[in-house]
Length: 220
Image 1 (tube, rainbow, N blue to C red):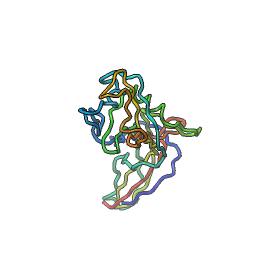
Image 2 (image 1 turned 30 degrees about the vertical axis):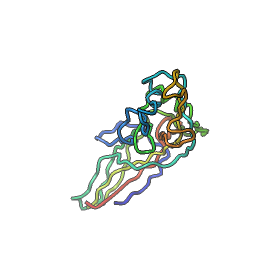
Image 3 (image 1 turned 45 degrees about the horizontal axis):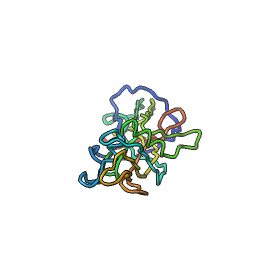
Image 4 (image 1 turned 90 degrees about the horizontal axis):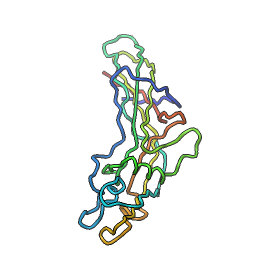
């Protein structure tokens, strides 16, 4: 299989005519309790930030590391083929991709995050200083377009899309209204940690996802 990158700065948001793949970022099943912590000896700060369990007066996300990078490629169109043809064929393909923020612990287990908790996380993440791109925790992002490509006889092809992702790593501080396991304040998983991961798609100023579109071809 060969992948060819298309340098598309922006793409129109068009409804697809075909059944396409839209794969969100994910990191496994969400945990009902703060991953890595024993309920016998520790409270549940992630649950508390989601409004579960004993009441709290502070839930704060502290960012330690942050960077933007091109994410994984996802197939975003059905396969077009010219397997039985004898001449090159031109195809019009409708592709679409959508995704949202993912939250995980140590990149191995996803975290449950409510709307209120998402707001606290966003407050702790450094905002974009660019006028052309942004990232907003919890916002659903989409990109898509109608594109045309030519396939040689005996070959098939499809489109892949790789979104740019803003990666944030840090820890969560929680202050309880009553002592939990002997303490008012808890730091998850510990103060200064980079084990809480938030991966947010980067968008252009018009709200569409920033990324790279790839055309892949292979023999039938």
